[in-house]
Length: 115
Image (cartoon, rainbow, N blue to C red; front, side, top):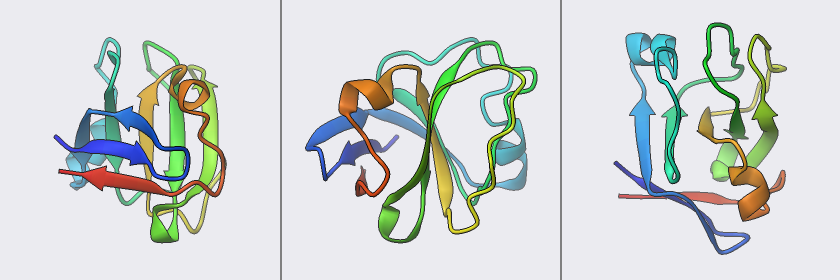
């Protein structure tokens, strides 16, 4: 599982990020997951929009575009919501609630995946 680093803020975003890059893994996303622990997360790619129907918990979401720069962010994305569409997003990084605040991640920050 890759680790994810915010290069701009010099902060670790997550150390155990799962990847959802097939039709079925993207479809499932975090459904049927009870929670995300510290450092956990899910990278869904490709993905330009998300929903939280049938989710059991709130979470943070970072949409990453060209150059792995943050093009959109949602802090504490609540249940039964739909995000806006980020047409230039390559994917979305779903993280435990509070991760964006803890790392100070902002739109424009560069994110790096490390294996």
